Length: 231
Image (cartoon, rainbow, N blue to C red; front, side, top):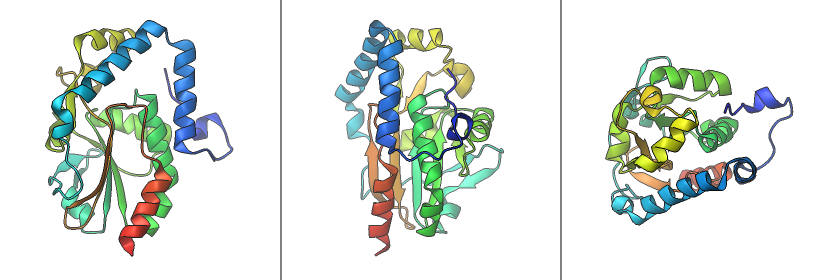
């Protein structure tokens, strides 16, 4: 399924909250996706929540790892360079095939001017290849860097990586979500979606990581947090 950008679907600017956008997508899935398939995804989410991954995820107060990754144009982007300009928002997402990731990144794209007004930078990181990031940035007209984290090496440093269980892989393959092709490796590993705010000294100020990929932090709350940090 192709999840169209706001510009493709309507000339009217999106005024709904991200919560409302994602709720609509959940309703569509509940209506059109067979119950047994929904149950498979719910089982996978529960198993991740019950695993030890929560103990590994970096939390506020921890120091963020230094990293350098390629953007959608193949240019190397260094976290140290970005932090030299101010606070950094980092969104870890699963890939362009995920409708909830698309919804989040479009919503973040909409508040990009306000993020920059507050002296902050925004990037998004996924295990998808540079080419996939290029296609996503172009399709959804994203104006911030999409960085390709080959083999989830940076996501692993943040404690976010899990392996898609065998029973769920079959569902993805039937839906034409070919992770080995999209990500360029055969690990079937993904990051838990997470949003971090990191200060200029690489200290994590805020962290929102949720094994339930249908839930994402509200962009307006991120703007409010940035305003508080700036005081």
